Length: 80
Image 1 (spheres, rainbow, N blue to C red):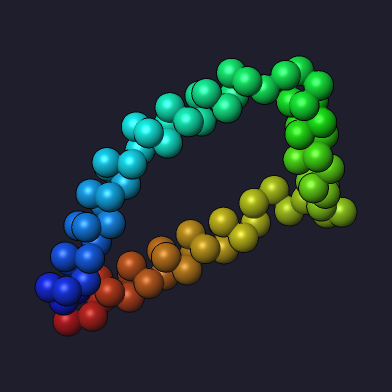
Image 2 (tube, rainbow, N blue to C red):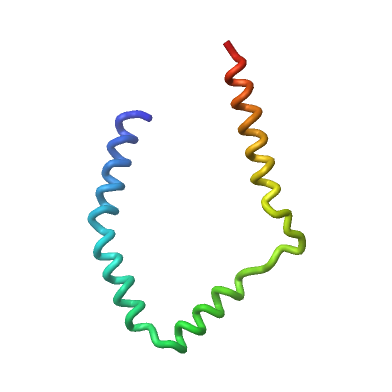
């Protein structure tokens, strides 16, 4: 990572560090003003976006990903 990118990342983190408390206060304030009916509607809207998979592979893609990582690790260990 070059020096410019490092500086930009540090600036980004610093901006979020300074903004986070104000954003958290705003979040808490908005939640406190939220009435039950609005919260119910928002929850139903959010849940309506979820669609169950027709076939659940129980995380098979994660198993495959771990297999690839394991093979890569073995190859790296065997390379001189």
